[in-house]
Every structure is written in C-alpha cells, then in structure tokens.
Amino acid sequence: MKFLFYTIISLIFFFSCKTEKEQEQINQKIFRYNELEVVKNLHPLSVTNEAERRIVHQIYNGLWRLENDGNFYPSLADSTLQIDSLTWEFVLKSNIQLHSTSTKEILTAKDVVESLINWAEKKSKTDEKLPIQTQIFKEIIGNDYEKAFEVINDRKFRIHLQIPFSPLVQLLSCTESLIVPNKKSRLGDKFSPIGSGAFYVDYFEDNHKITLKKNQNYFHKTIKLDTLPLLDEIHVYFYQNPEHIAYKILNNQLDWLPSTEQTQTVLPFIIQKEKELNQKRYKTKSNNITNKSETQSKEFISKFIQIDSFPLLQTAGFEVQILDTSNIDLRANFFTIQSFRQALNMGIYREEFKKIPSYSAPAHEGIFPNILPKHVQQNTQNKADGYYFHPQTSKDILQKIGFDSTLIASNMIKIFAEKKDTLWVNLARKQWKNLGINSILYLDDINKNKADLIATTFKASFADESFLFWSYFDRKSYDKFLMEKEGFLEFEKEETKTVTQTNNQNDSSKISFINKVDRNDLFSIKKLGFDSLFIEYLKQKNEIEREYLSNQLKNKLIRSAPFIEIFYLQTHQIRRSYIAELVPNALGIYHFDRLDKSFLEPAQLIREDYMYEEKSVSSEQ
Image 1 (cartoon, rainbow, N blue to C red):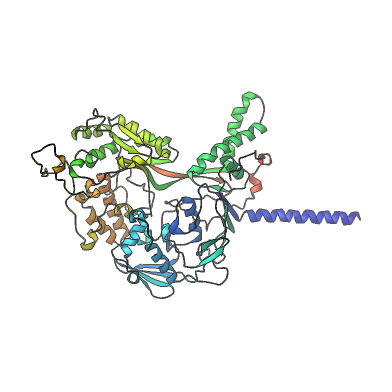
Image 2 (cartoon, rainbow, N blue to C red):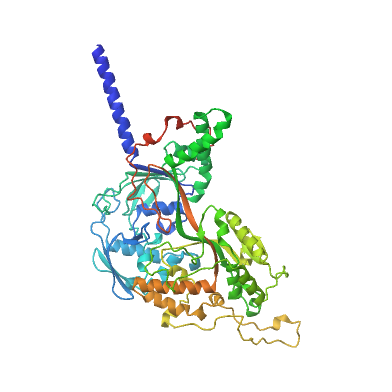
C-alpha cells in the first residue's frame, strides 16, 4: 500500500516538473510587449501611429526593406532590374504563401500590382495631407495604371514610370508600400487583411490585446537556411498605468517596452521598486541603507533590465512659415531674407539641448543625421555641413539687414509649438533673446497660422533624401526638364517694382499689388539651380554619383535655410536582459522575424525575493 502511495506521488511530481519545464520552453517562444498608443486598424495605408506601424511590418512584406544595418535588402523581390530611367522589372521569390487557413494561396505578380495601385489611388480631402511618400508615388506613376503596370507572368511584372525616379527601391521599402493582397479572412467581428509576413493575426481586440502567431510557411530563411520566424507568438498588450507596467516587466510578464514616452513614464517606478526591494533585503543601520541601496540599484538594472537608445532619422527644429501674400507685405517680413534665417541658425548653441530626454546629437549635419551607410568619403569638399554656433556673425547679419531689436512690437518673431515641445522651444527662445531677438510663443492651434516658426519634428518618410528635396522642387520642371526657373524673390538685390497709386494717398484700395509669390521662391532655391540638379539626381542610376549629387542638394537646401535644425532625436526602450538586443532601423521600424529569446530560463534571472505582490493599482488597463 505504501509502495503504491509513493509511486503515485512520484508520478505526480514527475509530470508536474515536466509541465513546468514545458511551460518555460513555451514562454521562451512567446514575445510580449506593451503599447501606450491605440491600434485601430492593421492596414499599411491607414497607419496613424508607431504602435500600428510596428505590427503591420510583422504581418506584411514589401518588395524591399530597410534593415537595422542601414542597408536595403530584397524581401518579396527575388530580383530587381532598372531597364532604363523609366522602366523597372521585378521578379518575385517563388512559392510565397499567404496567411490562409483554408486553401494554399501563393502571392502572384497580379496581387502585388493590385496592392501598388491601391496605394497610388490613396486619396484625402487634399493631396497635401497625404504622406509625402504617397504624393511622390502618385506623381511618378501617373493616372494611367494600365500603362504604368505590366504583369508579364505570375512572378514577373514591370513598372513604367512617368518621370525618372532612381531611388525607387528606397521608396518601395516604406510602410505604405507593404503588399496587401486583395484577400480577407474573418477575425471575430473584424476583417483582417491577409499578408505574407512572418506572423499572422490570431486575436485582435481594441485596447486589450493582439496576438500574432507564427507563419509556418514564411519564405525568408536564415543564412544557414533555418526556418523563420524563431518565435511562435507575439502578444501585444495595452496597459496604461505606468506602475502596473513596471510590475509586469519586473515580474517577467512583459519582455519589452518600446517608445521613449513609455520608457520615461515607467522607468521611475522600476527604480522605485528596486529601491524598495533592496531596502527590504539589506536593512541594516540607517546610515548604510542609502549607499547600499544605490549600489544594488545599478547592479540590478544592468543584470535584469536593459535600457537601450538608438538614433533615428528624426530631427527637432523649426520650419519657417511664410504665407503667400503681396510683395509689399513681404518687404516687412525679415523671414523672406535668406541671411536673416541663417542668422537664426547661427544663433543656436545646439550642445545645450542635451538636457532634453530624446536628444541624440546636435544638428550639425543638416536636416538629418548621417546614420546611413555612405559610399562617398565624408572628408571630401562635397560634404554637407549644417550650422554651428557663431553669435557674433549672427549679430553682424542682424545689424547689416537693419533688424532693430529695440522695436519689440514690430520685430517680435512669432513661434507656434505643442506643449510637449515647450522645453526645448523655450531654450531656443532664450538663446535668441541673448542676441536681441525677442519672441512670443503660441500654444493654441488658433494662432498657428500667425506664426513665423513652427516647432516640429522632421521625420524621414523613407530612407532617402529625395522626399526632402521633393517639397522644394517645381514639378513643372519635369515636363521639359528645364535647366532652371528664374524669377526668384530676393529683397537684398531686387529692383524696385512699380506701384501705381492715385493722387489720393489715403485711398489704399487703389494700390496695385503684384501676384502672389511662390513660397519656394522665397527661399531662393531656384537661384541655386536646385531643380536642374534634382532632375540629374533622379536620373542618376549610380549610387555613388547619386550620393554625391545628394550632398550638393543638401548644401543648397541648408544655405537657403527653410528650416532651423536644433538636435537629432533618438528612441529609448526597456527590455528584459534575456531578450536579444532589439535594434530598429533608421526609420524606427522593427522586424521580429529573426528575434529570439535567450535560452537562459527566465527563472534564473529572477530572484525569489523580487517577486513582490502588486499593490492595489487603478484598473486602468
């Protein structure tokens, strides 16, 4: 009888141990992270925030993609050939199976073309509200889609552009270019588009949880031809209470917290919980508690929790706003004078902005940092340089153009900013005030149109400078490939225009105003031969030559100074230390198909006394 009893106990113990071990192995294949932003849709053309962007890049693939080493690699495309300046040929990888639970469906060239046409047909109330990458794609494709796209067979198709656009591969790696086949599957009360990505959507509930499961037929392989993805599932949560989020990641119920905002709100609670733990463990004399706790704090965070920072193609700064108006009104606006805009740039000491949490580096390299691989040596004379701090030069310019700082009412520059940017905006205002440049800050949208400067974050739409140049390029120059457009506005040398007036000086209605002026001409870019150089850039096939032209274009844009770049941004994240380092690409996009969790059992990285009970926390989940 005793033998039977001990046998039963041994079997129960054996199977319970096996169950626990199996559960640990399961957990090693599930990646769990938290988002603060709401995810409402999973279509690349409808992405409104970074949380949605992170997910759609796991569900869909594009023809090409930008990796975290800064290089572009083919994804759906097996080969890409630029036949001439207007014709591109793509061949798809073979047997790319879609997320289908009913029948085995293979991605075809027709599916890709239909998806690209949907992108080209993307509309908004005004085209100006469309993302710049979508505006560019619509422009280079045109409206005749039968002529623009040619399906040759199930795997091969061609794109016939209306105008040359050599960085097409870079454009076809952006989020909007992800291929969404015209096939849908029922997902509860929602319809989830079918993709070809490493994961498919298994569960989707707004503000609660999203579950992505492994695509067993994913076409990408490792270098050793091992199957991908390495994870089985991805669980996305939407906890909002920072203390609750800290509890989850400290107790191994979350693996990763993306975004700078989440890092900043949760980190203080992680540090506090750690101090509470160490005070409990090492409670000795009151004189020794603080020092011991601080020592353990540093050791603990480096062992269990990692905080990472990565540079991005994003820049904090001001955009100059000059509304179309009459020539007479513009004469009183110092922002129409190029040297005044340059003086503002040279009046900023960018190193002082290091106190800003998202600060990465001073913006001395132009609009965006040079974080992508370069083919042209940066020590050449062709290097694109931004502005440095030269306060005396700035003062000399202000004096030369007649900017009188004592005339506060008339020479007060108007700045618009959102509340989240007020810290660095006020620091810039303080530096300008030292030069005699006074300013007023607007925080309400009502006054945004009145502002001379708009505080903003410049974000790269795709990893090529062409999207930046595009905004200052005259599209009409494409028609005949004009060498240059004259007629720029430059008040320092402009000849006096004839203004007819009647003898009655009080009758202002009799004044004859000239036509409204092109805003881009106000920045004197046309004088610098910008259009002709940009056309040459778009026609250039050779990457080295195109990069050389890009630096020339950036220098012209920097000289014209339509922006005041302050500092480059970086993103922060918190992760459990047993998670392999998660590195985004230069656009802040993550690819999880090669992500793996460490073979170290999570239990080995958790001290028993650290599993504290969560205090009563608001149920704001």
